[in-house]
Structures are given as C-alpha cells and as structure tokens.
Image 1 (cartoon, rainbow, N blue to C red):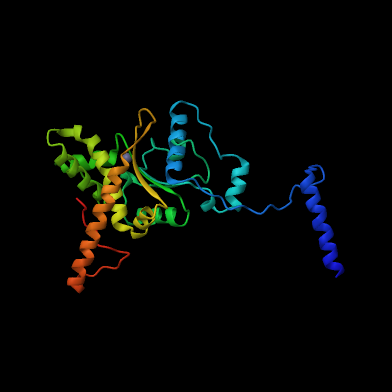
Image 2: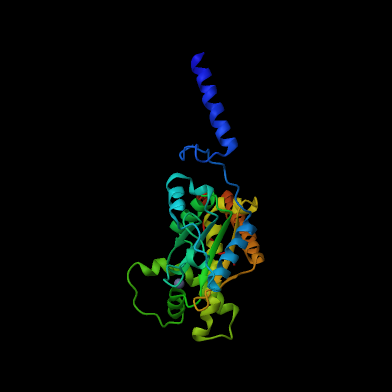
Length: 284
Ligand SMILES: [Zn+2]
C-alpha cells in the first residue's frame, strides 16, 4: 500500500512540474511517449516535393533534417513514421535525389539504379518503401540526358558497342520504351528520339512496377498510395510531373492483362502463375 502511495505522490509531482512548465526543475531526460505521426496524403506529399524542388531550383534550399536532433531520431525512431515518399531514380551523379527535393535524413526512401528500371530487385525495394515504410507517394523519376536510355537507343539503331557482361540484362527493360517512342514518333530520327524515349522509359517503369507488384496495385486502388512519373532536367534542376491520367491508364491496362493471364491459366492449368508472380506481359 505504501508503495502505491509513493508512486502516486511521485506521479503527482511529475504532473505538477509538467503543468507548471518549470524547466529549471524538470529533468532533461523525462521520457515522452512518441506520438504516431499522421502522414500527409499522396497529393500532399507531391506538393511537398514540388515545393522542395522549387526551393532547390531557386537557390533557397533549407537543407532540412540534417542536424544532430534528426540523427538522434533516426537512431531511435521508426523511419516508417517519417519518410514520406519512395523514389526510384537513375544512379547518374547529376540526380542527387534528396538535394533536388530539398529533403533530408529519414525523408525519402530512395532506390537508385542505372536507367531507373523497375526489375525484380527494384520492385521489391519499392514494395518495402510502400508497405513497410508506409510512404504515401511513389515517384518514378527519369532525367534528361540519361546515358542508359541513350546507350539503348543507339543499340536499337544498330549503333551499339560492346558492353560489359552485366549491363545488357540491366538495361533490357529500356528496349521496349525506345521502340515505343520510335513507333509513336515515326518522323523523328537519330538522337532526337532520346527525350521521347526517356519519357517512355518512365512509363515503362510504371508498367513494370504494376505488372510485377500486386501489392502496389492494391495500395493504389485503395487510395493509400499514389504512383507518379516525373522527369528531372539536369540543366535546370527542375522536376516536371507527368500526367496522372497516364498512370491510371497503365494501371487499368495491367489489371486487364493480368485478368487475361489468369483466365488463360484457368483454361490451361500448366500455365498457372502464382498471384504474387504474375507473368509479365506488355500492357501496350
Ligand atoms: Zn540516367
């Protein structure tokens, strides 16, 4: 009984100290229970990224979340309570993702790979960013002057050169994007097609992501996450968002093709694919 009374007195003293705000008497290490952070909506995150990029372009970056307090948070808190966007971008040294969005530590879950391709490892990383780090927005970020898209365009034009062993299987996701850009713009020849191929490669990434990731499709259909495409201009530092309507179209096409695959699998059981490993088929 005495023990409970002592506890009650101590708790009362602590309450009094907290209520009076007497900072000189309050120990600096009073534990404060972490409050679950409510993240912004997908469109709210897109607005945050837009504002951060505008600060970067105009030389007004604030370099947030890069101090000792943030590092302390990073070491003691769940990144899932803080990071607000997953971004897949090219490895190109001209595309430093946190810098171009004026973001800091524990703000962005970033996947970087040459040509910002969405193959199995990249899609697995994106699924982690969406389902475990709980980011409301997923950005497929292409960039101007992309060397990977340029190399594949040259190869498709028959002007390719010998590549190291592991590069062809890395960039083979870009081939259909280049061919689609050429088919959509038959009057454009040579390297002039590269900017169109860069945009087509963003859409290819969105398609590959949706095709390989049922969980991503589900999050998007439920409105819990949004996938967007964008192009970063290495000359100006500016990010241009691509139309959301195109993402909606690709999702609908992928959904239809997956249903088609499953229907055919039912007709021919030997073709059956696991729901989590659906056979990739071009949605175009
Ligand atoms: Zn690139």
